[in-house]
Length: 271
Ligand SMILES: N=CN[C@@H](CCC(=O)O)C(=O)O
Image: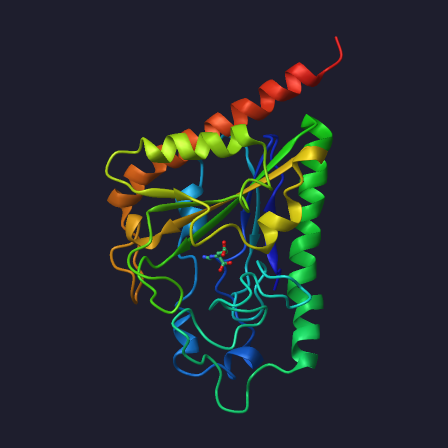
């Protein structure tokens, strides 16, 4: 079972998709409790939502579920938000704080080490290789990490989440012009709400790869699932009409970021 899928595109944009996978090996599946087996914290359909928005963007998609191991967490196990509720490298709870493993079946240190080597490391080796390949072509690479989450999760945040949650680790992970594109498009998207570096500031992926001084820019987009699902509960069905309206804005963001990267590349070329 391949643990990731890649499309080697020609665009300067790379779409990271760490949380849309639903594959769980049988031996791990048997250790999940009934709550865990709902796989509630999946970024449902996010790869479909972004499909075809750019002509030839690179995509790197984890096919394994985040309950196997979370590709958007520090492999050393460091918390994304020390002191706040969040989920870990191999989560023990879902986003509501409820256990996902049968009693006595929580992952051991040996399990975590095995899953790091089998899932997390190969996914990130593929992502790093694509970033290097794209940067070699264009002199710049923009990693846009695609996420979604339920809009109401009291364990993680108060009230309702905005529709678009842009994360750049307080501006550290990309050129300000790239951040500004996401802010401008989402602020002007009628009927939608948005925030920059609110509750979701960018996960480990964004923080790890976003090194603007070296030409690698990273930005995370966390979408409220109410923008493209029928309901944010099982069976987590896709709402094609809502998604169609949302895709217009996502396409605008990605197209403008691609144009920015191609322009920078042109300007940076020796004459
Ligand atoms: N849908 C996923 N959300 C991300 C959020 C990362 C962040 O805190 O910015 C995650 O848990 O990995």
